[in-house]
Length: 141
Figure (cartoon, rainbow, N blue to C red):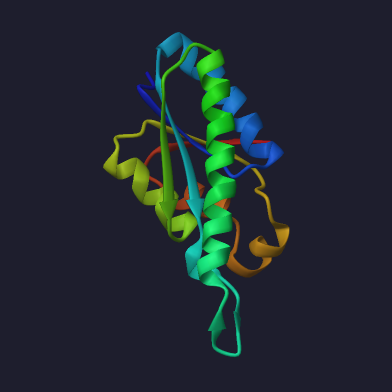
């Protein structure tokens, strides 16, 4: 039923709960898991025209790589196959487009991500994906 399952990984407790549930769903179907993390380079702070972007993007990418490596290890321990993807872009758009391009059957996401501060300014990624994705979306508490 679900050949390809995308799990949005952002390092939050909620994203690892989503991963655990996705693993439980994937096992009986022998699904491929796509572990996707999006570094939001579009909304970085600026100060008097000076961008903090180069170092900040590097730090965000390194954090995302560590989160993805942890998730990959969890999937491997469960005996499943995973594909890792680190994307730079706007998370809502990327997590809506990626499933179209990779024939994803199900998106599993945490209800809340790492930053309530960011949600206040850019809106809930989970809500946006659930409203705009063509794939099924499972939201985990």
